[in-house]
Image (cartoon, rainbow, N blue to C red; front, side, top):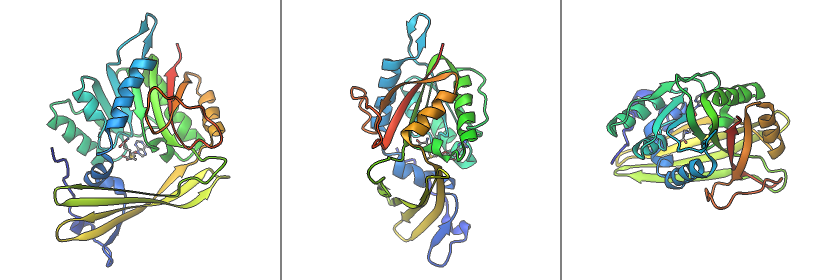
Length: 282
Ligand SMILES: C[S@@+](CC[C@H](N)C(=O)[O-])C[C@H]1O[C@@H](n2cnc3c(N)ncnc32)[C@H](O)[C@@H]1O
């Protein structure tokens, strides 16, 4: 399978040094090449999580059937869960991501169930058994009001006993947080190197800024796409206090990005990567 369908950077008026400033999420094919290859551990973990933690019904555990991903991006996990037999749907703010995700679902004979929408203000036609949001997309919500609005929307979307699996990086209170990360991937003649570098961290305003770039290599060209990403910061206490404000959700378990269902973690001041398993109360 080859999902890479790079947009033509020529039409985006590249700067003299071949650096194009813009929203990297407008380039789903490049995003997916780098991040889409990393899916197996999350895919296995999500299914194990649905089995171990719910969804629960009044009559005990049930098999998850309807799965929803807010901020689904290219649907790198969604379409695989669809192929595994779940009814999947997604939502994303970026129409290019939504289009990419729907075309991908269609190619795999699945209904095109991804819609353009804001994860702080949405309502689904039918409730779902589980939702997930694996790598920091939640941190795009830059205020407590937006974060709470999102969690309230998810809670309304879930059936009672349903799960929300939410992965994010916390800011540790001890030790130094990771400030630079780089990933690369190649498919055919296209290679993309992605970097994420912290440029500022203002813990009093709960704001972290990153320079994010894709270096794109084809046989004849090399150009760089770059932009700034702003994330809200969370300490362990700030996140758990936020969840306590959401009447219908409770934390049932915590894991880290090793995605080992047999190894839940205990949170402390040094915790950085964490996957919260939240459940809608009965
Ligand atoms: C890091 S990507 C993650 C995509 C996908 N969840 C994954 O795991 O590959 C973040 C996505 O969040 C989307 N996004 C950011 N703010 C959003 C909002 N308020 N509502 C919906 N989607 C949003 C972006 O358009 C982007 O596709």
